[in-house]
Image: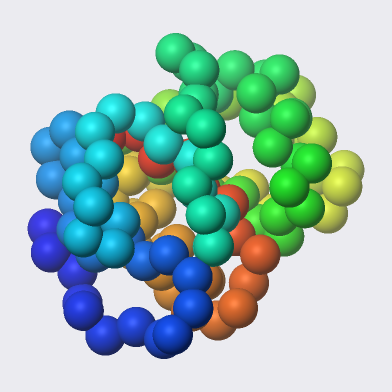
Length: 120
């Protein structure tokens, strides 16, 4: 799905997504990825919902974390979600298409958003 070309002057934008890829600012990325509003982070591990990996993301100071789990919802262990909740960090689990759209909206609002996106 191609997304709107309209965007503000700063940060990354997800411009399209489809089976096996996400396009960020016209650069195609295949496989899982993790991004902040202003930069891509190193590729996530084989299991991006690994509790240790997700807890490590907190060092980036997100205000909200989006977990785009591919075409279907896949929830991390409840202990992981509790870590976000205990620190006052929102964590939303959704399909990857919804995570891509939500990332752009929150980034456009200037929120400190972090997204882990598995290929749609």
